[in-house]
Length: 271
Length: 59
Image (cartoon, rainbow over all chains, first blue to last red; front, side):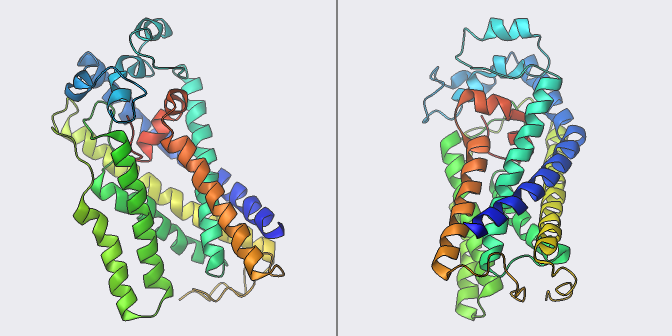
């Protein structure tokens, strides 16, 4: 399990660094917008259209809005005091939530680091099949690919959404998200590593297919969230994710280069 | 792109190599799937801002 250990080691370092960078960017770029949106959510009494219509079955996987229907308690993560969170809790089985402020931020940082390592594991493992990321520059290109696969492609059909925005069934959206990620990754891989025209055409078909099928959409787009706020959020999410992936790829390249001691000799080998 | 001739753990057999890399990739998918996609309320609430900020399907 020597190789496995090395992959985990590199991924842990890269995921930690990129996760911390992303958490810092989110604290300034995306989280303030989420908090603003939650004010709108609360102003609407926490029963936005679809939310109100959602059946009171929080754990029911077929009811994607069930989690949103527990909105009053979820909202409380932003503005409400713990007391009002408790007051809202009996109505919906919302479960534990971090207290506002430092605790909530700390869990966001933790989520960033843990999933950063998760993304890094995928990136390092997949890139090793293709010979490995030899230096920071190769890493930047791998990072661009990761951004295209995990942010750009799914974000076309399912743009970043703020709390209180209407959305289709959660499970359906998650399935579409994963299918789009898989198809886009396969497509990019075929284009990059197979020098064959038919396979390149197949690759384009794979990349386009999820968008022809179409992402699950809500019945109504009516929301209290101002268009401008949402647009700002889409830009913030996309740009922070781009930087995250570039940092992740570059750090993998640097750490792996140190590991194998070949960083300089491979510097110009890309393209 | 495939010019990185020095690989990690180059001495292992190709079958073992495949298994170990696949294992690492699945571990990564499991980790981000659990934090970002789990329907467990407590996990959702803990990573709420993160999920929105990553454009993961949320709520």
